[in-house]
Image (cartoon, helix red, strand yellow):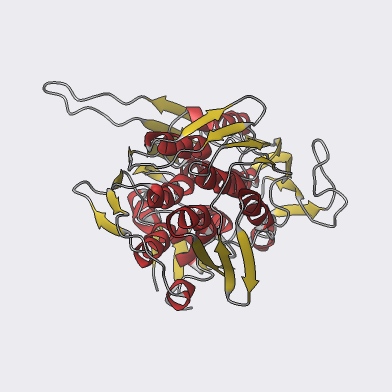
Amino acid sequence: MTDDVLVVHGGTPLQGRIRVRGAKNLVSKAMVAALLGDSPSRLFDVPKIRDVEVVRGLLGLHGVKVTDGDDDGELIFDPANVESASTDQINVHAGSSRIPILFCGPLLHRLGHAFIPDLGGCHIGPRPIDFHLQALREFGATVDKTPEGLHLSAPNGLRGTKFALPYPSVGATEQVLLTAVMAEGVTELRNAAVEPEIIDLICVLQKMGAIIKVHTDRVIEIQGVPKLHGYTHRPIPDRIEAASWAAAALATRGHVEVLGAEQADMMTFLNVFRSVGGEYEVTDARPPKLGHPGQEGGIRFWHPGGELNAVALETDVHPGFMTDWQQPLVVALTQARGLSIVHETVYEQRLGYTEALNSMGANIQVYRDCLGGTPCRFGRRNFKHSAVIAGPSKLHAADLVIPDLRAGFSHLIAALAAEGTSRVYGVDLINRGYEDFEAKLADLGAHVERP
């Protein structure tokens, strides 16, 4: 593990400018969607992250030719020769990502069968795939569970269906969309997720020839079509990464401009950021004109000085406060005066990372009760899913082991904000969702190094 550690000399405010690319939670799904086309697809602004490498590898195993385009971050997908991949080949990717489950629908349409290995991902709660499998069965798929994974077939093809999710799961909504677009007939999905990344995936599928209607009250209607063609798409920027750097600016009393960040998809975060006492300014993009090179838009985030304010917030599905925003923001809340309350309602085991913050001097208590708002589905189920953060706390350096992607970035922020030198182990996990984060830290003046 010694080669997977970052030495962080804390106490220096982050200052400078970085850029975010396409959203991790859209890019990988758009790559899977390319399987459905009968002509090549082109995706721009793709970040160089581990999840993209995994999906690229899986596409290649199934005969999709993936090449780099002329532009930095451009990928081209040619699905002309989709084929079956061996179980052994696919199992190389077992446990490295949860994306493979989304290959089911496209592979069933293209090949009539699919194999999905054991799934990995971050350990923040079970995130069962039961929703996915139930939906696929509703479409007419047969699912056989074996020790090595799942074998799926569709002997009679896939047919549209009416399906209601018990919870607006992002992954299950993506599964239904990627399966329904070429299923015979009409599919109606109720209680669907409507996150910006979902809407952007719908835009990708619509470009390919799909017919998808987004109704009110989380209802999505998909009219199946017999074939789809390739797409050309530039994804929405990564709002999770943008908020992570904003929280880092606040926690370190710094000033960070995040180029590419867009206000519309971050409105809920921006409201909380301002309530805590942070400041931001939206800079609009300016197209190039004669004699002027133009300017990329973004958002500048900074700590204005003085004390930060305690807040109470709940995570929720969109348009609520995103669950992936809470871990980095909690680090900043350790510096706010008073008692902040965070009620996590999306993942039941997402507050484990607070133990490491307490070891650095934070004062965070976690509870099984639903604090600060309405009861959620985890209430009375013995999950510690609410946190009370008392501040301000002086953070000191510590040795930290990263448990998952988003908590990992929060540990990194804490090390940057703390006095002294910390050693952060398992930092390569951060590469799953944060492109070139070490280079960006250097650009922001952070004092970090590999031992």
